[in-house]
Image 1 (cartoon, rainbow, N blue to C red):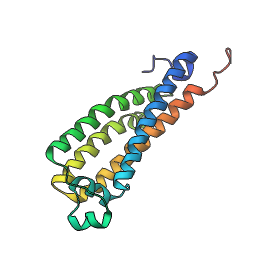
Image 2 (cartoon, one colour; image 1 turned 30 degrees about the horizontal axis):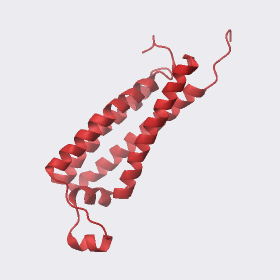
Image 3 (spheres, helix red, strand yellow; image 1 turned 180 degrees about the vertical axis):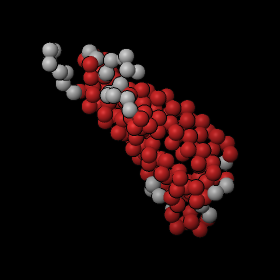
Image 4 (tube, rainbow, N blue to C red; image 1 turned 60 degrees about the vertical axis):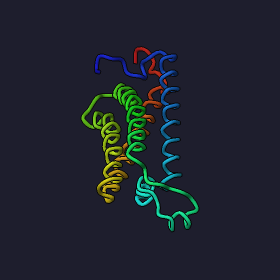
Length: 169
């Protein structure tokens, strides 16, 4: 990657399209995060309920219906999220690596959303079918995934819109 130009050194039209891509993928990821907050309240029990469902008494108190996810529903959710987010996290990670010197920490931040993607959606299977307390691992991996994504997006956007150094300096 060191022989590729840094984002801040690209011509403005390249930086602008990269910036637009990062903004739009951030809107999409934030929308998913908002949906997650709406359906689970970003709480361990909310995540468990989203995938394991509610009993009738809980549904009456909550005023909403939540049924356990079937094996087929779990397959569809996992398929859609892993295939949809993997290329986004790859692109954002590669762009992030082009924003500065590649270090171990920068590499770890770039790959972390992909690792957490597997752990989060694999973990939901564990929570749904085997071991509810694994929800804490799912919650932690999801937080890391979103945090790293938004950190990388911010760094990329800063690189896209940072003024170019004057020639000869």
